[in-house]
Image: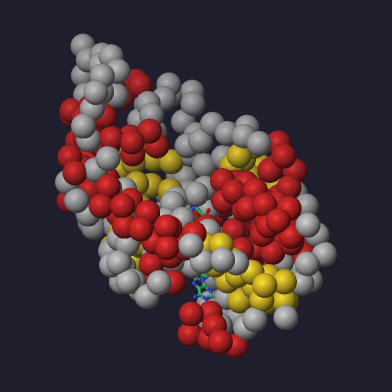
Amino acid sequence: MDDYLIVGSGLTGAVIARALSDAGHAVTVVERRSHAGGNVHEQTHASGIAFHTYGPHYFRTNSEKLWDYVHRFARFRPFEAALKSLVDGRLENWPIAASYIRRAARDWAPSPAGVVDNFEEASLAMMPRVVYEKFVKGYSEKQWGVPATALSASLAKRFDVREDDEPRLMRHRFQGLPEGGYSAFMSKLLDGIRIIVDCDYLKRRGEFSARTVVFTGPIDEYFGFAHGKLKYRGQRREHQYLPDIDWYQPCIQVNNPAAANGPHIRTIEWKHLIAPEQRNAIGGTLLTRETTVTPDDPNEYEYPFPDDANARLYAAYAEQARAIPNLLICGRLGEYCYYDMDQAIGRAQVLAQRLIDEAR
Ligand SMILES: Cc1cc2nc3c(=O)[nH]c(=O)nc-3n(C[C@H](O)[C@H](O)[C@H](O)COP(=O)(O)OP(=O)(O)OC[C@H]3O[C@@H](n4cnc5c(N)ncnc54)[C@H](O)[C@@H]3O)c2cc1C
């Protein structure tokens, strides 16, 4: 019998498995996809261009400890994502440049912090309506599939307004991409740990015995959706290889807020992620257009839906999970919470340490 069975080989499961294995425990990881690594995964197109299977992943952290930790498994090449938004037929900086706001509404000034009821009101405290409608409203409504007035004000904390000399998406101290790619990074993280892929734990749980189960899949699915389904948004991805041009757009990601330019929410051009000395030898370019949808299949769950009804539903499942001994449900799907990669690693380290302490 294993000491621990870890269900799911994404960052959460892999970091917990690594820590438990390093502490001398017998660990098995089961994964229902045919590859390990969860959503941190990449593939290579026939052209030689690597792309991230589940959407672009830019690693960033402010923590030196976490930066050191990821370097145990790969060297990281500096990469800071800089994005554009397609607005009125031009590619404008995203996050929005203060100079754009000054041009669009000369006399406008940000409102003093006050009580805001929803995402639209929180956004309008940061920018004039004309700018909000061009950059933010359409993008957010494509992302969540509901009017911006129905979204939580807290979502507006995910973006800000920048001076022109600070166009990078994130300001974290450490930013980069693993040399050799995410799949190699994840397999190094799981090195030496027994892993069974193509194995859905919920269909085969009778085949495993372990002192403790760590489940990193969807919490509602674990309980057979007994209280109802948690709502998620996911993305349909359409890939297009253009053999005759070297570059399509000036940066890795161009957002498409306007419905008039098509239903997709963003276009990714993967060559921007390849080191300059390697990409110059590759002909053509590979694009992915992402269109946001409400998925039914738990394998396609991406963003937890930010409203009170789903928060209450999650709380009911979490309470049920806490009552079961020797079971830990965690990770972005287990905790119904969007975690950046560094947050997922940090959280997994804390949970693993708790398991190690309890076993002493
Ligand atoms: C579209 C998108 C873009 C992102 N971009 C960034 C970014 O740029 N930067 C950043 O820092 N973070 C980004 N993230 C966040 C990052 O993907 C997460 O932090 C990370 O995936 C969390 O890992 P996890 O292990 O919790 O979940 P996952 O990676 O989803 O791993 C869970 C695993 O459990 C498996 N599983 C589920 N149920 C079962 C079962 N019954 N039996 C067996 N296996 C099961 C799943 O197949 C999956 O492999 C992004 C997330 C999304 C959705």
